[in-house]
Length: 341
Image (cartoon, rainbow, N blue to C red; front, side, top):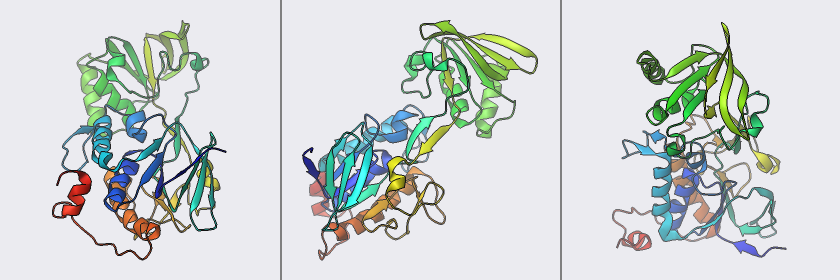
């Protein structure tokens, strides 16, 4: 049996909302440990769009996904949270004293009186397009996310899809790619109208190509893509490319969380709007994984939920202790915790 790690609050998910929860809990002197299936902090921001601009974070007119993660990591540094990466929480049980014991898929054991689920939509996997033999190219010349734009510099790039991700990366990667062609099965898109208009403007300027159709085959050797066969309204065409980005959406799965006895609704976890507690006392859910009337799937909504959750968690971890609400702008004790007093 592995040595047991004990903490005040176990947070499942190290995305932006889980990271900000560390800050709110830290202000209340609660120690946190985060567990994430990815190999680094940041969740979807780090995995899917680290260089994609985000425009709706308060006080930041624009910030990239990775910059947001970096700033949050800097903000929680005074609280010294623990991290366990590349692990899935496999089991959860309530102990006799009311606290929880969690085990990972690698056998690690954690104990805490409070569990916070901040797992976004659950563990996510990109949908693989139905193209024969695509597996041989994955990770070499076919990618389902953009971690570094520089990885696509001077390549002949083929982007496949008609949603926001496909259009956003068409616009962002056009300046660095040697050539770029967008393929979608029809001339109508599901993306933001402004992005679609900008894409068609680039097409008119002959800065990108656009092909209606579906990729039916790939050509290349040893995992290196050379061309893609696209079947369109007027037959098949062959498009030269050395990199391909298919954006067919994500498959979200709750994984073992679905077996924890929590009330679920359409793969989401219903919570109250006072504490964001689940149907199981002591287990909270914040961010995109929860559900309540009026819910907006925004990062800033998750930040708000983390703040209210922290107040309730404090009462569980330290029952009977008076919780005094303080402002970081005026509280000397909070400023000392943050190292700025």
